Image 1 (tube, each protein chain N blue to C red):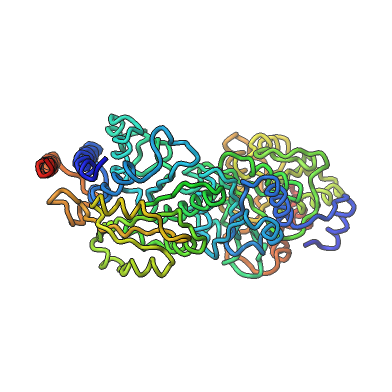
Image 2: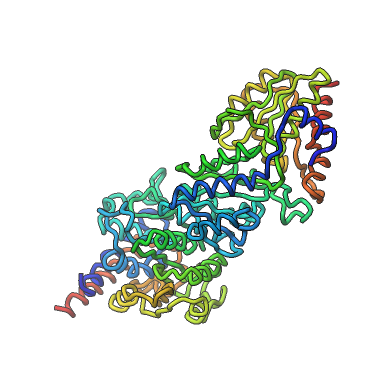
Length: 278
Length: 326
Ligand SMILES: [Mg+2]
């Protein structure tokens, strides 16, 4: 799949995710839109895992530490063929296995997450398991920038370089917003590149909506012995004008009219991209 | 740990001196790890306290150090277990079950990975060091989490068996070990089954339902009571969860009085588990819970605190006599 194919797919994924959140009456809209391109490139281009190899011992592992953006994950997994698209209609429903945070009951989900600051330590354990077995699989996690205030991330950041886990990749969905507002106002965390470098990581700063940049950063191996930190600059609410960079869309649910407008915008942008390339 | 009278009683009963359960744990784990390269221990600067220094020397590739970072310890242990490793996360119980409780709840129990968590120097093993180092809350908080087998072995034999059980378990297990030298209370030839209590002595007047390092004191108390014509049953309720309700109910039905004994707060411990089991079955024997009351816990050596709170041969015998109205 070319960069353009992935970019085109992202419009359909965004529409599907917004419909899902609208139907469920709950969800994390802004963060879902900001990490959707990251998931798209991971599942279609980077991760060595598929619905056929979901139990293979040497598959790549992906653990979504920012578990609240589960709607984006479910949408991409369904599109990738892990389960039928119709299952998405049950998200957050009574007794549905499609809970509002990732669980291993769902095909393709590696660990139950939702409390913040848990994904990176778990991924360290997985990366250590690969090293112990001399296995070639890589381990990926997706962090939120608000989440970085959890101290457990920094315990893990220290231990990852100590153990030279160059098979470990942490991707930061750096949309600079969290539920209360701008991250610099809630709990300032910059300069993130210097912090992670100081903890011994290889840091790569990319546009988190640029497929070429993401692919290069995620597929080029880090220096030997260094864990890899992808500082992905993203836009919360990406792709929908009235949701972009607006903190209230953290878990805002689009109304019927808002959904229709979002879909119109996404479809127009999709048509424009198709036209430009043809 | 024992008064001269208790020591004499132990000798009379032929109870052989063993080692600390923690030492029996470390030795068993090393034996298992030598036979299974898939087994790994994870430590938080705790290999010395966990008696795992020889293990670390013998099997450096099968021990992972995370530094003083218990949240990371549990997350890493869960990640290892999720990738097929038989991972034992070993850390003082006071830190393991408080600071990293959320990791235990989510990463291990909710995610349902077969990780083993080992709370070392539990209860008041560090009694003189103050409440920061007491783990008298651990069983209460862990009991309230779904999908965790909780085992508190009484002696070296139960410890060895519990470690072997945990190493082949397919679901999360928590083990709790103290660091005082134990007496062997398990009868020769006894089999260990997780979830099934061991009756160490039969009796009909009163039943001591105890676990961990308190069991031996109940056994000595039973012998002392026998001298006074009181027949006391002693049960090692080594598995706190799932509780062996059949054995608990049998005690409630067959004995006039039931006394629970634990190195734990009375709030949320095995005593309350036993009480709720008895009451819900319509049984109401005379009942007393011995353990640590809800107060600013006294500090001192474990033996001092046991005596202070009535966990001793003399204290438990007196409690039984009072409960029986003698
Ligand atoms: Mg954010």
